[in-house]
Length: 168
Image 1 (tube, rainbow, N blue to C red):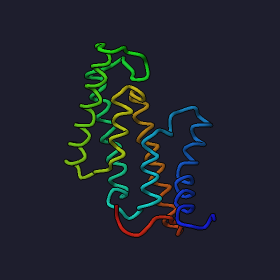
Image 2 (cartoon, one colour):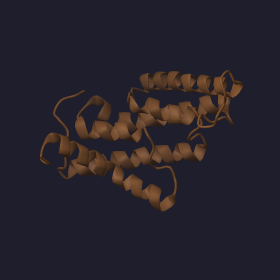
Image 3 (tube, rainbow, N blue to C red):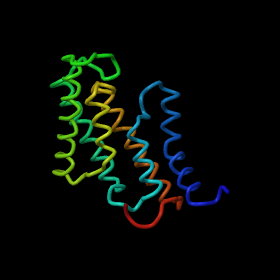
Image 4 (cartoon, rainbow, N blue to C red):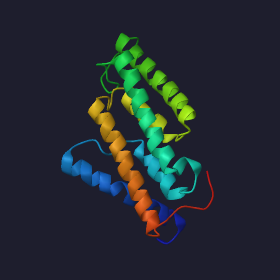
């Protein structure tokens, strides 16, 4: 029951995230956030896919952070999507606009830099909607992605793999 590809892939994704989970626990800082899940999933299931290349993963998330910071601080600074804004409120409009602009800027930035990595569009929304919108939090996001990329490289170097062959 615990020997199929599903188990290896799930274990691999968990192994990639456990270190960052430990960092969160020890520091209280947001080194684990929603868009790391899809990145870990790609590493576990499609490690040779174009979107799993270290340059694309790190570059895409970095573009997403920068785009999110620009959009949020230019359009919605001070508002946070997790706070109740009420229907038709100006804060809600600013947050919605910030999120849309962040995704547009991220998509353009990744296209221009050849760093396409779909989970980076989730990263840009995390920042652009004010969830992790301080510059320090943006730096933590990029550092966490770097740790994930380094773990993937180390696991691969030592022969630990879980993914299926081919690209997705």
